[in-house]
Amino acid sequence: MSSEPIRSAGRSDAARRVLREVFGFEQFRGEQAGVIDTVIDGGNALVLMPTGGGKSLCYQVPALVRDGTALIVSPLIALMHDQVEALKNLGVRAEVLNSSLAPDERMRVLRDLHDGALDLLYVAPEGLMQPHMLDRLASVPIALLAIDEAHCVSQWGHDFRPEYLALGALAERFPGVPRIALTATADLRTRDEIERALFADGCRRFTASFDRPNIHYQVAPRTNARRQLVDFIGREHAGDAGIVYCLSRRRCEQVAGWLVEEGLDALPYHAGLEPEARRRAQDRFIREEGVIVVATIAFGMGIDKPDVRFVAHLDLPRSIEAYYQETGRAGRDGLPSNAWMVYGLDDVYRLRQMLAESELSDDRQRIERQRLEALLGYCEQVGCRRPPLLGYFGEAHPGDCGHCDNCQSPPKLGDATEPARMALSCVYRTGQRFGAGHVIDVLVGRRTERVERLGHDRLSTFGIGEEHARGYWQALLRQLLAGGLLATDPDGHGGLRLDPSARALLRGELRWKMREPARVPKTGRARTSSRSGAPVAPEHAPVFDQLRALRLELARAEGVPPYVVFHDATLAAMAEARPQTLAALGDLHGVGRHKLDKYGEKFLERLQALNASAG
Image (tube, rainbow, N blue to C red; front, side, top):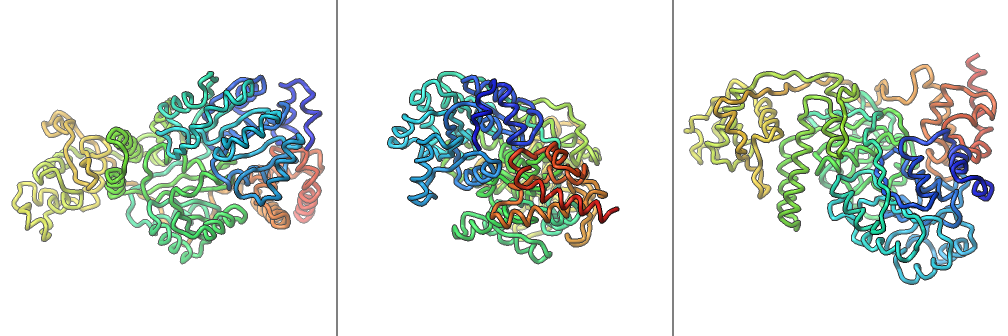
């Protein structure tokens, strides 16, 4: 679209006009206005804002207000294409410039760039920092430089990309051009490293709340992973798009197979698949409704899909930071969504072993172990889940969120002081080098070949815990590990050992309360779900489903993802308001001027027909 009328207005007023007329939103959220004003006025900004918090608007709005072309540095080709496709559908002049372009397309984009016909140009860091590209840009008016996924610059970040380090030189290459770096997840160490690497000349730091109130958090011990996952989807999310994360490629294939057997539309995604298979899986996930992808962490950072209704973890992630980023891919449109996870002690052992076998320095391994232990503590949390989750990022939360499993069904605590002493004594007497399975065998008096060969059937702790089932002891050892009284050996082989803090409990100076396992209701097959996580109230669901069908029809005709036409949140607003004129439709959240002109009549006709049939 031509942005001259907007750019000719006062800059503050122009930003708000862009927000309303282009993006269809009435007001900025949280820190957005401060960031946008800073960049429009020529200042640098480091922005920490959760996924779904509106980071993209922080550079897209200034790009349409300032003169020149905004350069957006992005790490993934898929993410660039998705964002450019969505912008073009808003009438914005945006393009990508990367290795995926054919030579004639590349020349066309460069010609548009030099002719001043682009508002935003998305580039990869490797391509931007090529000398010939920097020389070419020297003759082009640059509105701003945006560095997305800025945690990639940090050695401590979970997606480190060494080529991002070169971006610090942009300050000298483009003096006077404002720079903005954005990320959804970065602890204090990562934030400081980003600022040192990219903003030697200084910047304002904006940190929005990391709370995602629309996400419901639920964590449970893994008992029967298949049944637990299928029951969860059946209870909450039949027909919804979702991501299931697993640690290994083999596990991804296995779980995708389970879901297909249950009648669900599920696909595996991992680095071991052929590139074409990965592309097809990602394309189906983005362009179709209700597809579930079962993936390793290789999937997600380049996905700009707002209507992912759930993220499930069947294995423990590597850290709270990774968990937060992965769960943040749910509900980017602000509608109710779920972050669901099951885990076991074997996950801790596996992750510890992966760390021990890695090439990380001893200091880095120590930091990563601390991050893993923080996540384990979060999993065994007995109170509201938000204080430990947000506290990891330096944000206080009062608790009692009302939107996590512990708030909705507070766990029961029972005195387990004596069983805890038994468990600690057994770990000590078996030599502090065996995993939970062997320790439990000794506690319950199970005479395995290994127990007898080692003489552990003659220990004083043999059989002292036979009154409790194995599941009880597994839960207790897990909670002692999360509470810091037990630790795993640093070589990653899963052996349990006592932490010095265990002495107080063994001496009788400390009591230990154990969280009793919660009972989760079970349902039938997924397709019988009542969809309690639906984005609209039951009375509006038939209209919402009709609008969703129209959206899919239009998206397929244009070859774009459905959310590019309208987000679920906008369809939900239509279903609830039932506008009967174009003016009323244009007042709804997410309906900008270009989309009203392009799709307004079609949606209005469908709404009028639905009203007539209801009457």
